[in-house]
Image (cartoon, rainbow, N blue to C red; front, side, top):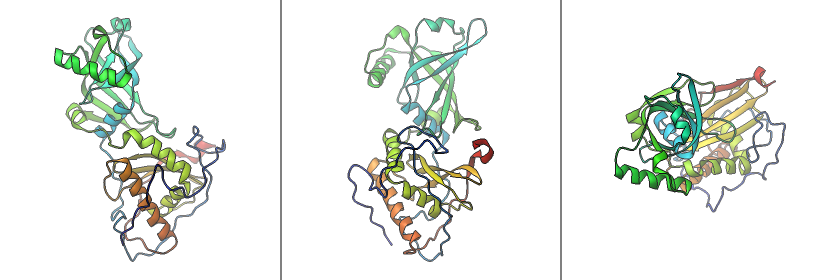
Length: 320
């Protein structure tokens, strides 16, 4: 069966009224990131048919660490530049930065530059908060250098002005020559090292510039669909009272659920196919929403394996 996506205007078709803010949420997030409480149990369905829009093999498909790092750098404009001082002390300063077409950070430094060590070894740490729920981060490791030729210098001037709307003093312009990148999904998690070549050849996520708006839109207007996704597309063996979309990218979206008995868990639902623009993301979301609604009402059955991989974010005792 082929499901036709709903006609889209400027937003998703809301399945429930806009959500009211509440300070009782276990997730406790900023405005636009709060949601109602629901109590759902994992739905058990028979298997007999398949929809073309359904993921035929639900698995944890996610962007590579190099792509995630490039996305973080593209969406951010401030970070912490760290190095060793002449006396050997670690020194970190907040800086503004822009990124070149291959992800090379360019910085505007002032007199604090004189405090850094002479060998120029440095790191630039950057964080990206996602709806107050998760903070992926990357640390660029390399050497702090001046642009090597006039052509590069002119291009960097253009990049800086496009990002900040102002010219940059050539004497204060530096770049971080990327040698490797440490990418971490969130606080307290193990990082992954990305080499310079993989980082520079990776592309930032095509949904990055509107991902946060879409996430807030879905969490506000489509909370019932988000809860239904957890029941239909994930093999949860426990009750949950809260569910929330964290982020969306070209390959799928990440969700977080809270269970009074188990704690907080995170998992990923991949798209049936890659999406590259806002229209495609909305169309795919609405298609999955329609299918989940039909399965819930036994109008059609599942014919794929549900998501079974869940990451515990916080055990129950840490939330009490």
